[in-house]
Length: 480
Image 1: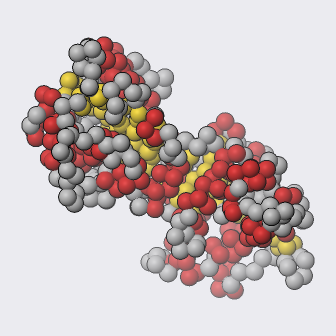
Image 2: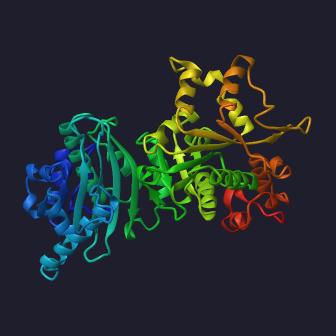
Image 3: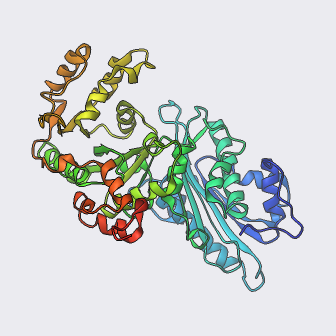
């Protein structure tokens, strides 16, 4: 629960930055340290300026020199400094010192915290806008185990001073939120942007952990980041923990499968396996440097008009149970997705899709907002080292197998399609199971909800058992 001083009343509307810092300082129990590297001591200075800091701040520090930093926190294996690992080392080391130097017997009511950030701001050439990690390790009851909130930010401003100021504001918001808004993490995400322009900073990864957040699923918070427009894409791994997209995508070959996965079916898994098999036969394919992503778009999750978190979590649980990495994005068009990947890698990008999806890509109506229309979109889509792995469909009327050779696009686009097709940008998946091609997620979900027998055979091994055990997607037993 949030800590309150006797007689303390919540601020009306949004408290000012000074009010937030002062409220922390005037709480005689909150006590901790600040360690900030890379953008000045922008967070700590707010607490010094508002008054009463002596009751809150045990120490502030900034180990700018790399040798000093390594001597204090140890050297990272990859030699980098702006990393999650570095942030966690800073939090743990500073908390260890705090506990060692402040006598708990004399300060039995103290609520310890350590705030840290490790940041790189925009470079002189303005080629790299900068990014950073920020976090807090804290407690809301004396001697309770610590809870953590860590976030990764990407600067969007093109001025170092402006970036420093924004960092300072978000740091105050994070500390204030940790102590006074920890019972509503989703709301807290919005409060992180109090007094900051949404265009100034992007938050693309956030994780809550510890006893205060034992019931929090970070995947839901990931989804919230995209829904609120705080970032365009988020990722989480098979263990359900949020991942930093930049780290996971960096210099990787990428195979992406877009779908609803409601639920994931045999067809989805077959597309994944066959795509991976084709890719591994390509020259210079490196399994150790290849990432497979199951991508769900925000528009897909909002197909009913609003996001159903339970429905989202049902999909997430199934994909994670299959050991897959999941990406939630706000990219309606494929060229936007490819542009995003290209920010982090120049290696191979492969999109696995069905015939209907490819036909939609060649529909001009999706590119009317671009000055160059479909040509501009395709320049962005196929300019990079990209190929489409195409999974065929069965024509419901004729029973004919439709692939890249006999699919139909608008006559006006036919020559454009042929250009990419005959330049090996479209690769047919040939080893397929015709029976599985007749499996559709919409039919399976209806059978699950109606309790119709036989849907289990349309899903990968283990998935049907999980649906029944956890009662996912409104599962109804055929006996009910």
